[in-house]
Image (tube, rainbow, N blue to C red):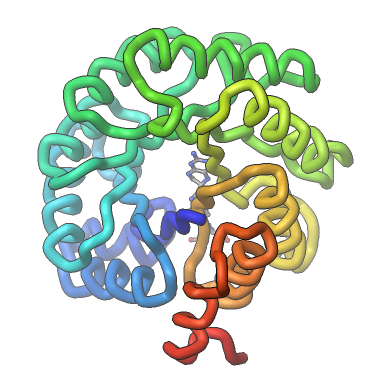
Length: 266
Ligand code: THG
């Protein structure tokens, strides 16, 4: 499971402050602590700065974070110019968050992926928005994956995000997402799946329990990347345990490594 740490995102108040003040110490600390907590990749998003400054701030953040940790970055922006600046500054194979089946987004992001050899999170939506029913969601997802492969990406470079809705307003939302991942995974062997957790539990108290159960169930359906708070060590422990049970961590090697680092207690 690829844990993509979500904390270097200026929608978070503390991160917005660090970005606004160009506080390198605070951002380096956030990067290093997320990696120590189990993140294998870090999302970098500075979407709250002025649009005309976003490319320059993204370039600065990518260089700063890559100078502090060895993990690759997930360059996250709604602004293609900021994605381009981040990719230009990035060393090694980056991930882009995100492309989708929306025609303008697709047209603007695809060339960046090809130029920089980046992998990508592909959001399961198109010009009609997020599909409302399972059949439509499969059709939109399959078309997006087929288009990306036709346009030169390999299945291994695509992380499909099924965009789970909240169970508070859609009781079948989690089940539909699991079904979508199973179906797309069967149709496209090698395709990866990524998900954020901010939506599934929206509007429900003590969200962390739902988020943790959702990740475990999703791993059973093929989820292999998650954008999450790595400081939720219970979540990290459940992920490590699920990898053993799903034979993704044969002989418990990573589980025991985490134990030896003292990361399985408490
Ligand atoms: N899929 C993809 N990208 C995504 C998401 C996704 N990017 C955004 C989001 N979902 C993942 N990133 C975050 C970053 C921070 C928080 C949640 C998700 C967060 N928010 C606080 C909270 O929920 O309590 C509120 C802000 C604050 O504390 O200041 O922690 O699904 N492809």
